[in-house]
Length: 332
Ligand code: NAI
Image (cartoon, rainbow, N blue to C red; front, top):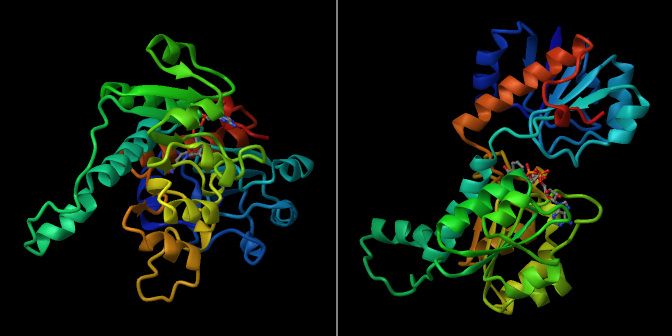
């Protein structure tokens, strides 16, 4: 059986080749994104394997169906880039890796938060130039601060637990509160109450039509002046233009993003020799109090190993007419 990978990077090949020894699929790795321009590249593959920025819309899905593709396997958790209704209409199964390492993303969120509020990114550069002054590096303690967590699924829960360990008060908003978290002291409130009371706000809900631009001019205005905002979920949760205005007015004191609305043109690529045409990301990167990483939160050895194992197992099971191990893996 053959699988065609899109958006494949050397590290994908490294991990998938190891775990494919148990399955013996014929894998072809393409570096390009899947989209209307390339859907025809599919030849006699039973499955395509895609990542977060591949565009798997209705047009692409109809080409995949014509080519005889049976499975679209996402090697990630989020699936906002796939038209599930179109897949269903064409009888193509869609699977994902619902939980590969929530801690990988939660720990990266903490790394971004600590970097920003203790300014270690600045200190790193400064001492390399033999500037040992502390002026401008003043930070604040997390201990005793109030942290707002929007979305307490697998990643949000892991982040809540870490923040409790730091001695923070943790407020959360989720339409489905988690009992265990409540018993451990996490307080659930309305979105507005969480936004109004938190010193740090971290987004961990999925991108859906209902959460698109959840953070906008009016929700930013609810936040405490001097708030620190972190998004390691999906770029479309934040209206970037409104966030830039809030940074300019100093209402938002720090912003950390691992995801960005227009990231598919930038992230996962080395553009160091290119002219970046996206003025919004350039403006964001010009702020001293904005930290950008390029969709890196998932990127640990543990997560990549789990992603490769579960993706191959999902494809194998579906092609053999069985259900994936984890029922949340099967989207269509
Ligand atoms: P999950 O499905 O376990 O949890 C999502 C939670 O958000 C659920 O509890 C759900 O009830 C809640 N939710 C839904 N709508 C909400 C709303 N309007 N307000 C508040 N909460 C809401 O998902 P998981 O695994 O925790 O992942 C969360 C997100 O993280 C994914 O959707 C994905 O976009 C992102 N992600 C980012 C990665 C990265 O490398 N930066 C890697 C993996 C996931």
